[in-house]
Length: 154
Image (cartoon, rainbow, N blue to C red; front, side):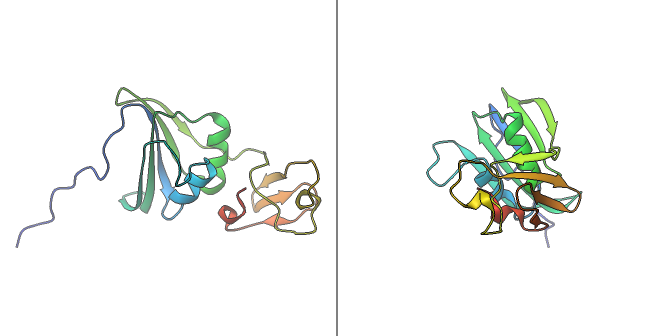
């Protein structure tokens, strides 16, 4: 019996753009959503889910052609993929590696799960959460989000 076929590249390298690696398995699609990438996007992108990883067991990878993420976008990614690494690619080479860091506060990124919170009352304010070790605390009503933050992304 023949052995396992030689491992190859699952998705092609990109010429210019961003590769988001080390996303926990199953979080690749929420990462796209947090970047505002929907099914109607005109961007060229590749998504690999549940890819084998020596470090993580399984992981997701997102490649976005011709788009370099800015710090605000990287901060947003940290909410659902705190171990992700961001690689900026130019002419097929990694020119910058960015580790994600959870910011001290997030504004307008996640909505408060408390329906009585002022941030859910059509007031001219944006949601505001303090990032804490145990989760995200609403600055207006103190409601905590401790898990499944991806489902609260605006």
